[in-house]
Image 1 (cartoon, each protein chain N blue to C red):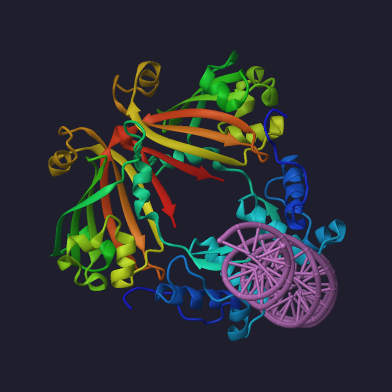
Image 2: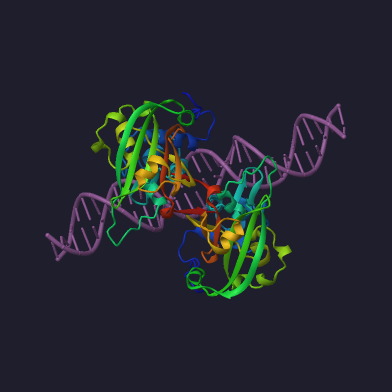
Length: 242
Length: 242
DNA sequence: GTTATCTAGTTCTATATAGAAGTAGTTGAC
DNA sequence: GTCAACTACTTCTATATAGAACTAGATAAC
């Protein structure tokens, strides 16, 4: 344990301990996405707690976005579908009615020694570096540089590209059992230079929007750091307050 | 009632109806910010409901960010302090240690006929138009154009500027009883032109970040639309997902 | 075959109750 | 005066119970 992970149980209330146990089982991949977990009654029976307490634990996980409840039907594991959410930053309206599908192209994958700032974030200098280009309507829209700690993703660098697919997070879960629970995006503004400009088909110095994302596992470990760039004119972001 | 406001009670569950009644009393200004509401017991007594139901109603308002509970002390009205949150979009670090205070300067206020897009958002063309400049460390940082429906804010155009203060939302509440419960911000990038460039002290065509905000009352009525511009290099935004 | 009804499961609402945990002011001892 | 103890209050946790609302699949009627 390199970092301070949540200390086991100590003296937390029962509903929180149950929440933690459930979160751990979810992270372990015990249930498939879009499939039902045990019912309130079942959990009540084999946890020895009361229904109210069980409901409170489940509700927490719902609030955190991991689960989803449907009255009369059951409690379901939500599929983690926000990898595509980077696209949500950019205006994807483009010519007419055909809803083109965003595509991904991996440009490079390699196990390398991380530069200091990246190593500090990921907690190790043994990392994977991935370059990726994301296309929309056959035009390059986003240029990405992705850094992963090597250990949890060992073998990624030699997986066939065909197996990976356009979204990384579902792949992380399937292939490595790594679940991205949370991410922080930081948006800023700059100008395109060098390879970034070339890849996006922009002139040197063109205005770009930059998104730096840090992604976390359920236990708070950093699983990814990525830097995404796209043309500033197409950038558009919505945010709710209050 | 021009728009579909929440229909009274019909057949909602009790805890939701209690939530609505409490929200209405809060909006009516019955309690001061940072001050205690009636206790669970008191509410239980004069609502005729049970503690659990009362707690559920209160918890809703806590989740919505209106209230705040402190064990052993009471339930408090949170002061609506997110007017300044536009500043949160911009990097305010600036020379040394003195934490300069953001200031506001009203440039113009007038009752006018709204252009069509604004009228569509506000639901009326009888509006107030306000131009404002926000300063940080004595330098202009944000240029704002604010549109309000006239009726709820009648008289604003002739209030003395000294009475208004640097933050609008607390003033809206005090002076007009209008409570901003929720807002949606939309961020994009563009270039400065005309008066905007002049006011911010930027050259024509300089890159700027633009934030369009729509603000809502508790019942969903639109109470404000504003467009804020600031220099793009100083823009920085953090966002949580998941 | 198609449609309606039943049924066994699920979550959701609501009540009642008990005590733990925490706060803030008052009282009492020194 | 100072500090400790007490007290009356608050929210928080947890249990037990009952029925309503809803779902999805099985069964029955035609």
